[in-house]
Image (cartoon, rainbow over all chains, first blue to last red; front, top):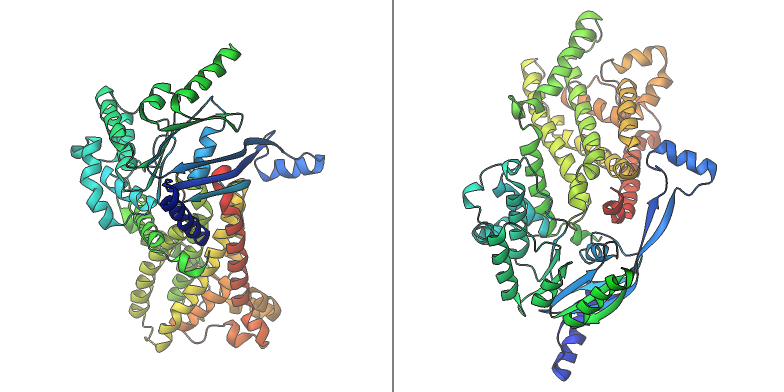
Length: 267
Length: 270
């Protein structure tokens, strides 16, 4: 895997020299994902044995992503849009290596920081400080590396005076702010964000918006969102997913138009 | 999953953090806190000692029977804690699995390491207790880490195997609880193995082939008295002597392979 990654990197670098093409951060090729969804309650040994005896499979297969291919370039801000249940979040989880592809391949060049489903798995019994370090470890950062990032994260979250309190005493807004700050301030190469621009109050949102605007061209970001405003404001490029397939790809304006059309047709 | 990859810097950082977290959280909100790690096996020992040594007058012919019994209960508690925590580990941390990608085995190993640390503290208590009881220190004490390692690897193998099944079929942890009750009596912890061999030598030999029994009897032999019956001095067949160790390695291998195969799908199934 790493060998192929390296060789791909090398070949893309060569291509970049020749044709001024940009470096590829993520290559997704022919990606498919099928889930086995339990039909009845087929959890528990009893039900499984019962189902076997009656010749019931116990699940139906649902194809969530069907032969998806695309590339994300280094430093690019890519938006992924689509209706509820179109497969966006599954795609993000596949990119973050939380799910395993049924078919196809994902090649990633660089370290990846995912921020999925609001929160990165905080422990309510630990203090804010301890959670920051635990989270850092989950992302692969050592204590020393976290020491260097710590103040920055806490200041961005605007929570320096709460860091020695247990997380269960935080308001939900504070928790999300802290989680979000870790994700965006941790020094990863690729940032993966799911529906998070609505974090915190108006002041914090504005700060995030300014921060996203400043990321432009400096960091690779993949953002899943329902807000076409955000797509237009931050994204260099966007992808529209419908029923597990990419149906539009390219300029944010073009994709936004296609996205809005989906709803006109169905209303 | 080749060897250098397993012990990468990233993984050891995460393992350390998870063990630290486990320690902080385990006894939070309890007045005696970490003392419970020692109190639990010692109280179990106190109950068993009262019932079996004092009331039922068992083990009178064994030198240092109280130390002998304590060694049994502490080793058993370690096995019990290690497996039950390990089996629950993946399900208990499913919130993390669904949000971030990291090697799943670290969760299982971190939960068993907490049990291992608790055990080592209890082992110190045993040694103090043994010295107070007049057991003479011996060079065989230095061999004890070998049998501890064997018991740890056995627990880890079981945790890997049953922990992965438990993700899909939560019945496993309940079944294991009941099975542990049965196993407790199948292992010579409260009763001396001589009690079994007195009526049936074959039954005693069969009991000894259980790796847990082999480890506990070996530990007693190494730590307390060379009058303890072990597979090494009680079973003649060379192959049978090594059978408990082979069973341990077999369970560890099967457990790891099964875990590795299924860990890819934990995030979807948990």
